[in-house]
Length: 223
Length: 223
DNA sequence: TGTAATTTGTAACAAATGTTACATTTCCTC
DNA sequence: GAGGAAATGTAACATTTGTTACAAATTACA
Image 1: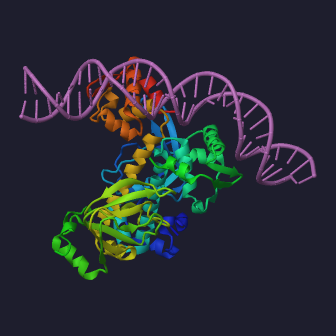
Image 2: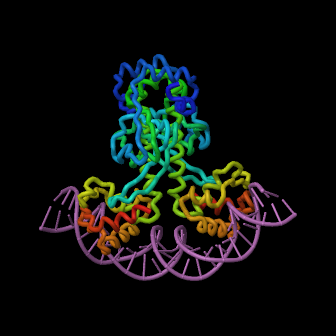
Image 3: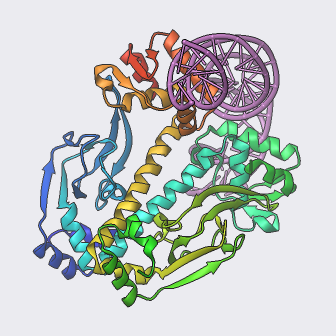
């Protein structure tokens, strides 16, 4: 295979190795190597192609006006860069992308990739699944972040777990995980939960949470 | 035309009326009418088709455990319901959907619609553009909501406006709009901005904001 | 089963934001 | 230019969350 790593890429899932190879016979592509530390793309640059990490890894980084940087996330093979944004209106990279190590990228033009999807229904569905799943994820995160108080977030979270109607749910996340998910600190979450418990809204035993006062609990998550 | 309203749908943009009609000759679809107040879908229901509002309108609504509802948004013709979520893994409607008035919906199966996109590159690009643009929007909102303080949000917002490097930007939003965008109250935003001004970080004159102390301003938006 | 690592509970204080209310300024339209 | 609407500035106080620190409980696993 030309790019063996692609056989475990969700984008090419369902395609045989031979089929993947076949694609790269017919399509225009190029690969580029970047030494460790090299700038791959600059934030604000137009997204004109699909870029897939073949080896090494890259990181997304934000730069403020003084040049200080904040790392956002790492991208490893065989993931694509900013996959969910590619075909957006005036799509631009939201962050700088820097090579963590010696890295090789596979680059396919947007329009070329569109043709590929047009020709292979599986590829199309794979990409659509990736983008839509990302939108679902972002939308879900947004919902929790837009609740004002921690009580609201927690009430909503508990209410959305399976079994909420029966009044008994199982929460399989640690306080820390949940706090990160909500975008708050762990002690603040613990305090909010413990207050709700002492007010008789819920009762918590390990991972099991019982909903004692549905009405008051709900009046938190709905305003 | 069978569904004249579709000619001004972004999803069918670039297609002639005759072409749109042609599509509905060949594809399996159905339309359903709902009287005002009828439940169109229930939150959690699997998304199995593309649903486009042809006439009337529907609203997304969340229900808490006691049955109290919160309106999320209205969907008018010729918009589709939960368009960005359709092909997501285990995609389900995030909210209840209720008809505001007598409403007619055009319903096309997911797989049927996939075939349509497979057969028409313009349709495919239109849909991809819609989904990716939505992902960009959600990601942008998320960025601002995940900054802890209002100062951070504001500093980041100002820094992202064109002209920030020159130290002089134009903010075309009202305080109220910006406060909503940040998910905070207007007086709180006003206070934060006025404090930053009195500390010599920025100076504000109407819509023009001057960045006076880049270093300290940046130390806010990056941690 | 015992021990170390992880997770949770809690407290006191600081910081940030929300709430409410009202005065002032700017903008729009006639 | 006058008048009303919209937007902004500001203040006092309540509420919420963050921060830091430490003890207790639980879990993982040797």
